[in-house]
Length: 193
View (cartoon, rainbow, N blue to C red):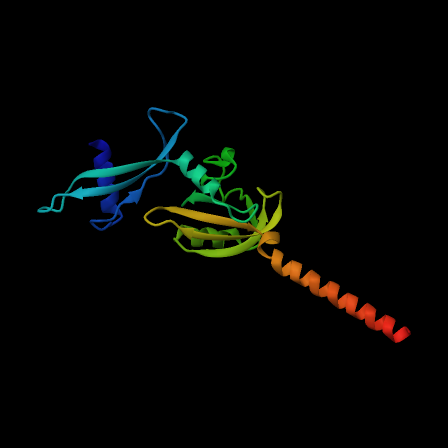
């Protein structure tokens, strides 16, 4: 009941509609201290008074969410992770970064764009893309894309190594150079003889 009142206040403060819930910040499970859970909470209203009389909550393991994200293949070395509005890692391929590293304080991606403008867009629920160097990918150049997750203060960020993203273009360009060089060599040899 105390927690229900807290959630009801949060729903009222955020002016949520009657059919809109929200994602809670991850917290450690009461039963399993090493297990983090996030909850999707939606209010139950009295149809006559429109007062909140209860909530329905669905809990998801953040560890399981991290596992699901890591199973999504993004090229060979690309990866995805989720941060909260403050920039804290909620999921990441490096488990030791989860809730201990912050994208805005000590970024794992050294953005070529001003970090403050990216932070501002993420905090305001914006989406975008950019270019930088990924610490997780051994400082490889990478493209990143970010977008908010619905009904949450979370953002998913997808990181793609530049080499993988433009591999076909690079391979095609090398083939053109090779064929052109070979053609010039043949023309040169034909002119000599």
